[in-house]
Image 1 (cartoon, helix red, strand yellow):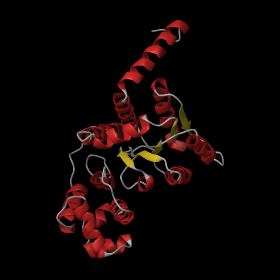
Image 2: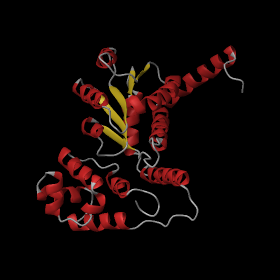
Image 3: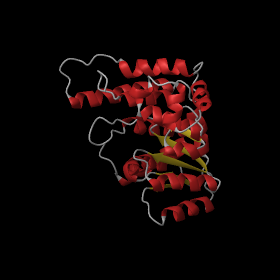
Image 4: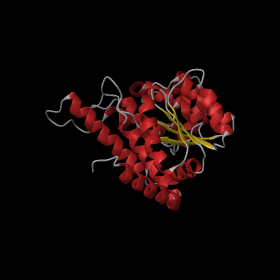
Length: 281
């Protein structure tokens, strides 16, 4: 762990945020994250052995990330795994975890300088009737949170937050009802059912937008658009501040993509809420 309390693997993971990687490249990225401190001092051939791929694949991987070759990527890995900002005096573990989340949000904000991916995702989802929103296990609360607000402005939002034999049936029903896209929120430890549902949705013709923790997530392989947001890992259970922020950014973009019907539905909701005295303030 570096001086700022962030694991080296988490710093390396940030290199791949937003990158569209092939399955082979994801294997390389996963190996670099899992063995961050060690990999920063390995040759391209040794990294290839570690990941079980060819040496040219490692070189192409580095170039896909914008580096001139693997040596340039290795220099970046060394800087990420051997240095870091000094830890503020007197910080306890809880403070470090929260401050790490602020760093995640800062990087997320920087990444949103380019909104192309968010806008494409928003267009796909805002046009889907109905709109299935998948989120199992740890992602279920976030799927429900997104679904609660999305349903105020988009008709027929269907939150798929329970697994089992009926999950794919509900997905089939949404597709038969006219759904054209699905939002999948897939967070570590990546439930098998979630990944399988993403693959099934894609195979059935749905466009898939994935909110997940990184571009090398298992959900990224079958997604049309990947919106990565890092997950905090310094406490016993993960912090999902980043994915929640990304979900709300996406919903805002969806509202921006269809301003007139969204405004009309918001006004209708406010009128209904006032008539029924739903809120105290």
